[in-house]
Amino acid sequence: MNCEIVAKAPVHPTEDLDKVIEALSNVFDYDDILIAEESVTVNGNTSCLFPFKEFLEKRQIRDTARKIILKGWDEESKTINLNLSKQAAFAGMINLVDDDLSPLGEIEVKITTTDVEEFANWLCAH
Image 1 (cartoon, rainbow, N blue to C red):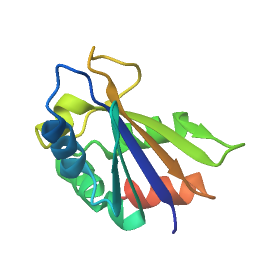
Image 2 (cartoon, helix red, strand yellow):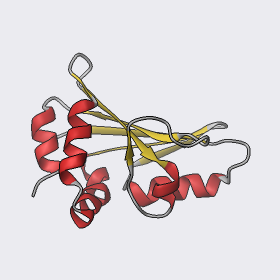
Image 3 (cartoon, one colour):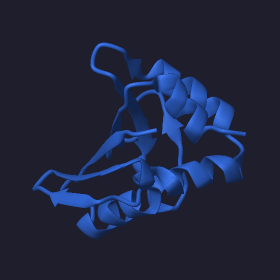
C-alpha cells in the first residue's frame, strides 16, 4: 500500500513556531519539512503515518477514524482530506475534527492514494 502525505499547519503571530513544529512531529514521522512565514508543512509516504496508526490502535478509535477517512475521500483527486486538532497534536494525541474548532486553526492533512479502502483497512486495522 502506497500513499503520499502532506500535512500543513498554520502559524499565527501569537503562536510559537517551535510548538507548531513539535505538534507535527508528535503525529508524523515526516521526510521533509517546509517552514514558511504563515505555515509549516511536512510530507512523507506511508511510513510517515506509523505514529498516527499506533495512536489509533492505543486509543481504540479506529472505527471512528475509518468513518472520517471515508467521509474525507475525494475520488476525483484520489485524496483523503482530514483535519487534526493542532492543540491535541502538541499534547501528543490525535483528535480528528470535522470542522475548524480552534481559532488557531487545525492541521490540514491530505493523503493521496489510489485505493481508499485498502488505505483505511491498513490504517484502521483491528
